[in-house]
Image (cartoon, rainbow, N blue to C red; front, side, top):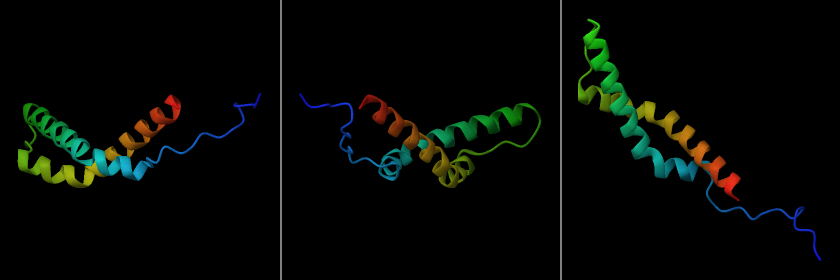
Length: 82
């Protein structure tokens, strides 16, 4: 009977960068919503508000680290499930 505990599992084929490409629209949208809500809180506190278009523009570069974090998290879940 072979010892299956020492045999490596095959790579499922989803590296983090591929997951990040798939998740980018969702992560950038979540960042835009959170930035807009933060702008509303700042407006309530007496600071300037952030328009929806400005929040969307800021979410394009700020969505990259959020996407990378989501890709790492999902990749970890996939590794754990395997």
